[in-house]
Amino acid sequence: MVSEQQFPGAIVIVGTEGQLGKRLAALYSDIGHEVVSLPLQSGADLDSLVTPSRGKPISLLVFCDDYSGDDDDAAAIQRTNMKAALERLAYMPFRLASLLEPALTEGNGKLVLLSRANAMMERPNDAGRFSERPFRAAAHALWRCLSIEWRDKGIRCGIVALADPRDRDETGLLPKAIAAIGSQESPVTLRDVNGGNLPW
Image (tube, rainbow, N blue to C red; front, side, top):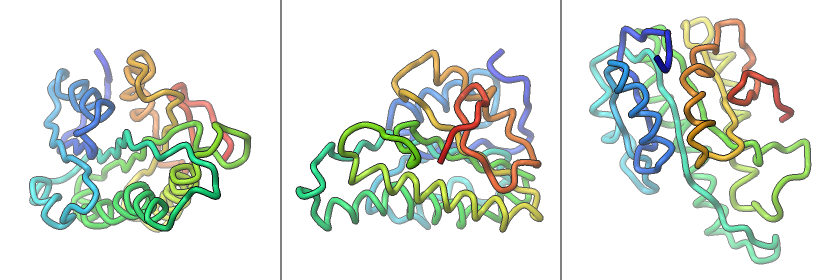
């Protein structure tokens, strides 16, 4: 069994147009959970996007994003690159979480952001990443804020950083890592799939 935790409400996986989101949705569906899949596309009408999730309690809301910014020299980055990465990696997850907050509150749910270990800001990482890495870090900061603001509503927040979203063995550990996220994590910490704390 992938996960011993049973979620009485819906599980919403955002980002199911990518392989990571598809795999996670399949893992939960295969063990009998009700899964609502939402594609995450830049420029989408976010209010319309959440329509399939409305009217039912949400026990788990997970953001999976296979987005990869250009590995460019800082001097080559243009405003359009930065704006697209900011919208995709920071604004869209924050906005969708806010739209679905009433359903999360009703479901006493978990709000989970899947990120990447190479988005940490306290150690050298891959060269470049100027159009991706800072905005994943911005999303981490937003999740820390939400973990404080929404804790009295019973919403538990978590951030799980993957070393390689394409690694099936690593993604297979996600349900267990998500199940381990508890109400005591406020403010939220950044963790790997084995539960180890990571630097910001």
